[in-house]
Image 1 (tube, rainbow, N blue to C red):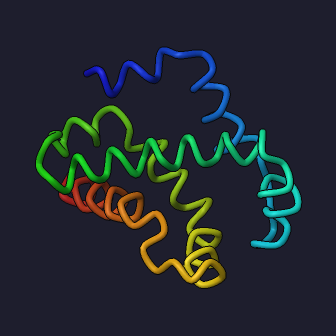
Image 2 (cartoon, rainbow, N blue to C red):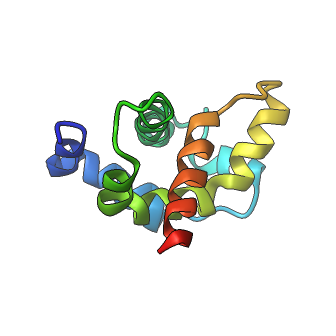
Length: 119
């Protein structure tokens, strides 16, 4: 549960709400102009949340956290994040020449959707 305690933090919630529900972008270039490297304050929000999800994905992959608990507590924000940012992540893998960029975010998404499909 300490991992979930992050959700009680107002600053964390502001980041999540911004990147998941306020931010809009049309493509990789548009994202970079609005929220990317040129605006480190905004980009830091995205990186902080993506790294949080990456960490959850690593813990899940290594069997250190229960997948059904993650599904129960966080599935909505995980799937929303991946659905919204998958094109950006895939383009980042190419443009940064970093094939494993956000690999555990993707793993996390795949595991959560697999659980949801089981019902």
